[in-house]
Length: 127
Image (cartoon, rainbow, N blue to C red; front, side):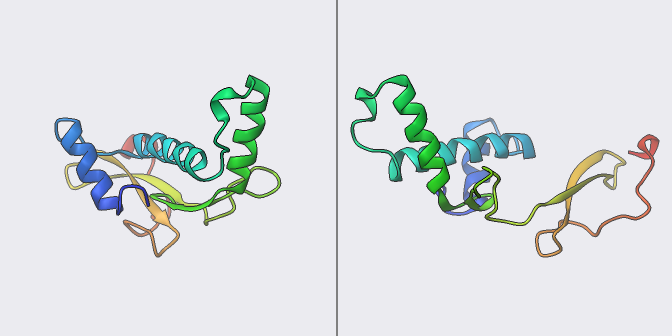
């Protein structure tokens, strides 16, 4: 991964952002940037700057299609339908913590889960 480990990415983010936590949405944005960076670094020809806009789009589309790299989200690899087929999907639940504050937590797959899946799901009023 570009940042070494997920823990290192979280540390670097907090260091650069007054101690704020790297949340799910921001991590997704970081992963998108990492994909573009890796595509530009590994799959784009040297004369990218000289290409027309249409050629740049074609080159980027091709590069993303060739992507097969490890990121903080796991393996990124796209299938012929441009869907990320490199990893299993994750499931999240909004669950209250000890202070009854809602927290978005990963519940599946089990090897990545932060907490066990809660069934039945808490009511929206309880979250």
